[in-house]
Amino acid sequence: MPKQGNAVNEKCGQPPAANCQTTATSGEGEQQMPFEEVISILGRHEGLLKAPQDREGLEKLRDDDKTPSDAKQALSALLDNKAYFAAFDGAKEGKTDGKISAKDVQKLQERPEMRVYADFKAAQFTDNYVPSDAPPNSPARAMTANDAMRELFRYSESLPKNISLETLQNIADGSEKMDKCPPQLAAAAKFFVQNPDQWQAFSGKDNPTHSVSRDRLCDLASFNVKLSPQERKALDTLDANRDIFFKGGGIKTDKLESIANNKENSKEVRDAANLLAQPNSMLFSMLDNAKHGAGGNFFNKANDRNISTGDLDAFLKKGSNQVAEPPRASMRPVESAQRAMVQGQESQPDPKKEKGGGFTKLLEALSYLTMFIPGIGMAGAAAAAGRMIGTVVGRSVATSATREAVTQAGTQTTRQALSESARQGGREGLKDGVRDAGIDMAKDLGKEGLNRYRDRNEEPAPGNPNLEQPRVWAQS
Image (cartoon, rainbow, N blue to C red):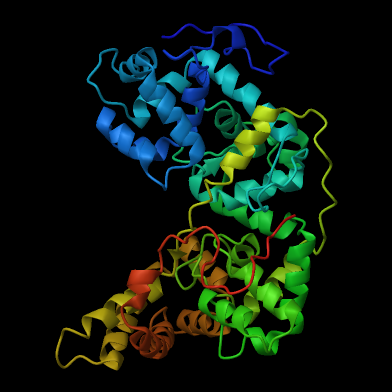
């Protein structure tokens, strides 16, 4: 392993494992990235190295336009320094094969000195925070609990399924296996580790080992987070102009694009639509799951990218209805940490995956099959679905888990069906209710065709290219 430092160099602001005096140099005498920094950065991008890469593969990855700039720099340092490459190559097995993978990176990150290094850097990030959804060149600031909640929500797809204070410590020191962990997420984890009382207030967990599920964490954030002034204005505009936003049904991205690009609408309406239409809009995601929660259930999807009036009503009723205080400037500025934060904005959150809605998914599959099986219409397929669902739910209705799932479904029709099924032995009422709902839903699904399969999980590009006006940012 290349030589490391072992004391904090206050002058250059480096953590214990990376004294500036021991930084390697290239053949031309130019200063290279410290070995520990290469490990730390590649650890934030483990997803890039899921498959083992030889030197040629690493070069292609470095030269790929989609690779974030900090990862490009780390890969360049790795490729340019034989000692670095050899240390990574033999990290996992102790022997070299000319290939490097995420497992090699993880092995290096688990070393005690590396955990100290990453933890120190995470602390710097909390003091030099730049939001992941703020515009370029935004000034660094001191992170707050509200900021930390926002980043955990935004990057929830990168988090483990269950999160405790111990999990957050592992995220901060780099030992948690994660495909993506930009400085914004490391800072959020470190903030709560430094402020366990804030974590307890947020999660309700006072034991460091007690965890909260990822879905529950998202719900807690949705109803406790204080909005930015821009988000609050957009929410008020949405509520005051329901006739525009909900005309013809729920709010989807394509409708928001149309509203934002329609010059007949007021500037307030267009700006609200613009903000909501941005990829990974936090306000859109919170509204999307406001009624049924981030985990969904058998009858209702989560993250279906379709905001209903019920979602808006639920968010207005349950949300904090507060605006975040103006940010405080960083009191301990560190240039390298601020630079890392700016680069971290390139690693935007992964789209939140659809969950739940097993009933609808079954109908989608049946609507697809009717295109290929002669003699089976939508009504017939829906009736078959009704019989199947009635059988499954009827057999399970006596269990507490099913009762809870049906209760969470939240629709009056479902509650009536359950009550009727209880009176009739748990069969006919539920079967008929599901069958009738299935016919209506199947008709709607048939109209949409196969585009739902092709489009629903596409990764959005940074910024919405379909908007004609400048981007309205969630934060300033």
